[in-house]
Length: 150
Image 1: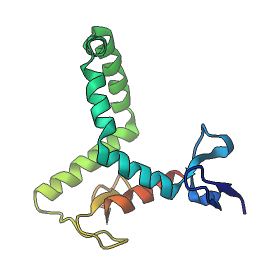
Image 2: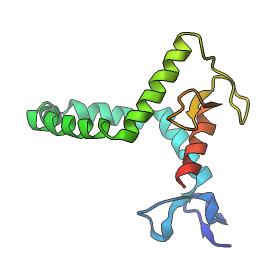
Image 3: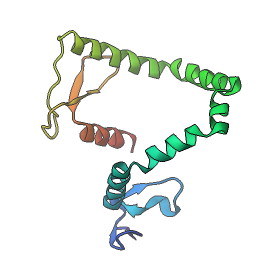
């Protein structure tokens, strides 16, 4: 079993307790999953990034760049290319269809199938079957997608 020492809590843990990273040496992040979660909670509460982003986008040179015709054209071309991808179109159509069924009252939101928490999110098992849905809470939904990619 491979182990690694977390640079924050200084504990030796299995590498499965670290997030994977393409840029960090050894292929894993330098802090463990629990330390990363704690840091994320702190950043979310302090709003540091929100304040930083607001200040950044209020700078004159950034406003000028964002409003330039070249920037707008480049963004619109990339967005057009992304939306023309057949896989993206199928995903968007499945989301649109299931959301319309929810609004029409034909489909009811259910609790999370894994943990039972209320207000489940729609997880499409197959985007070609838009009503083939498993209801998952936000946390379980992210875990399922991470497992699918990993």
